[in-house]
Image (tube, helix red, strand yellow):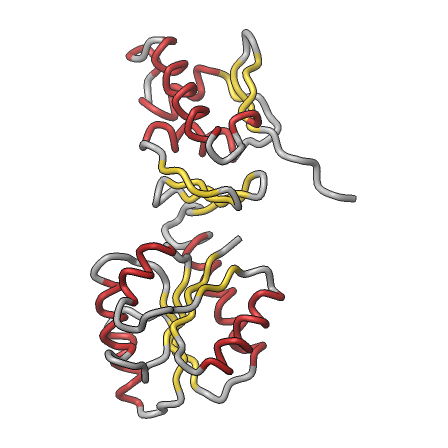
Length: 230
């Protein structure tokens, strides 16, 4: 599930937007303290930020600048201000889109979906996010997140999981996994791969996913996934 941080001080609008986005299965977070937006952003780690320009204490441009100094997360401005300089400023600060109030919800949803597809599916000529067993596997952040929490993986652990998840319900032999990690398996001991898989399982155990990395004796490993509903 994608997490969206909605930085909007109009409580009525916030509730309305949150309700509509929740209907589209997005997980929406608001801001409790408009003086600590960056701290809350860091705690939430959203996949996308929607931000108004007019905000208490500091405007949206300030927080866009602060977020951009820490993250490349996609940002969409949502504002009643319609001066061209506001749109130009938004883009110069690294925003991905600008939606003017009043707006049609279908337009906002379409822009959100397009931005998420571009960033997480096609952003860098490779997929940046996969879903597996209801969890978001984010290759760039090296994280796996589901309703039970989030775990951070090492580069090698993520490479193993990435290889398995992209071949869900298929056995990946040990040699292929070693090639994915070190390009040439002759430089890697068989025990090294076992150690890395065990460490990966240990971390996934914290969010209930370890049992879905299966060992196929004499063959390799497999990430299992529930069959699609008919």
